[in-house]
Length: 413
Ligand code: ADP
Ligand code: ASP
Ligand code: MG
Image 1 (cartoon, rainbow, N blue to C red):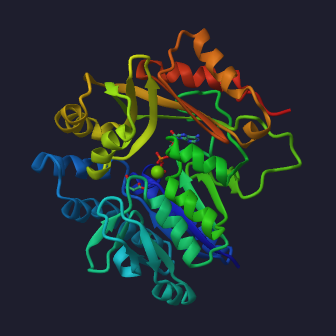
Image 2 (tube, rainbow, N blue to C red):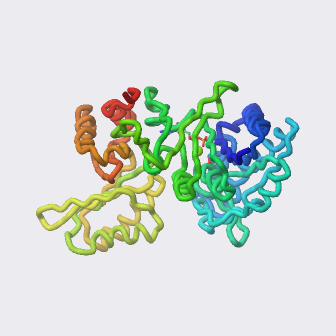
Image 3 (cartoon, rainbow, N blue to C red):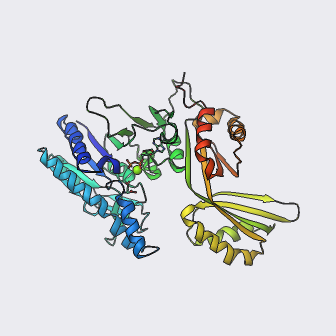
């Protein structure tokens, strides 16, 4: 007998038929003698719908009230699934995050889980219930409902698996595993049987939304056995999906690059003609940080005339605010010549632990993009990834070209 946590995303619970299909899969695991905790997202599109409603009322919705609102999406699906399970003759009980007592900090809309009380769940599991928990939500110490950021149900699933010391955390979604890149952009993308935590962390942080980055961090930290699989496969035709592994598979020749990630959600800002003196970077980025805007890539070019150009990228949603701060506070304060912005850029990244032992990945990447006439605006590297910023109109081309250049469409020898 094993304890399994199964998380189902929005498309997997999109309507009554899909919810019944989830109930049937859960029932199968129960029949095999396992204990099952299910974590659900809202029906697909529901969270977006609720956010749009909020924005119709308030351009920048109050964070506490927004969390109160968007957390309702998950309450719909957990209660419906509990009913569907009962309809199949199983004992089942739905729980909101607060009812479990998933305690978070009070950073509304991007709260972090601090602790999980497993007592109630454990009692119900031991008396034969399937536990159905609302993903994406928790409560802070004062009892306010909080949410964990978009895609946060993945993190709820992994955190519950860690708290309950589950044997496996299964993330059911609309693709049958983690691919070499988003199969919706590159049909030739290949499913990976395994991927290391390190690589999955990079892929997630660089835009592959198949897993929320915090879920991967959690799984790595608490050694949760994490697997991504499809909820759409027919009975008897299920495949094992992708296992996220701690160890590199030493028995196989490692590919140099494991995947290509991309993120459209980026914008670039440039401060032109800044006097080149100590403290300039902090004078520019200080006010940006104070406004709680995360900065991703940064480059500074020193000119010959004693001035420099300073560029950085931010989340596209913060573009307007960042531009305003640069124009109104920073430009007059540091005596910059001009401010430029571009919110039609994207970031494309190649990720692979094999990069460590293979020089020449960067040059190969740059050459492949150049051959297609794609101009690189910014570059950043780490030990296992290379990212470039390019014009958004080249996103799909760049991803396809790199996917092919690194031989990702061919099965490893
Ligand atoms: P869910 O609603 O189940 O949480 P998401 O839409 O959040 O599903 O994540 C699944 C989607 O992630 C897939 O439909 C796919 O388009 C996208 N995706 C992006 N990169 C990858 C990748 N490397 N492998 C698999 N899917 C990916
Ligand atoms: N429903 C939330 C979202 O759409 C959480 C999730 O699906 O993981 O972001
Ligand atoms: Mg998701």
